[in-house]
Image (cartoon, rainbow, N blue to C red; front, top):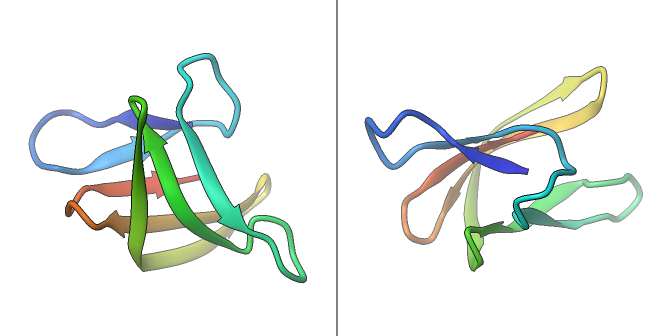
Length: 77
């Protein structure tokens, strides 16, 4: 679930994939689970992902740093 970062820029960061705030990530899942994020649902608004800036693996699965069409950045884990 995306969580806000300190309001120093348009950056956002995320916490776990499940939560109670109603924020979600839409992903493409081809040959692997959560292969590529397609959109972030942030505070009730769907923000399409325009670019993946970084991709890494964690013990919990894939993680991404993405930029949306509005220029907001999210770290998705």
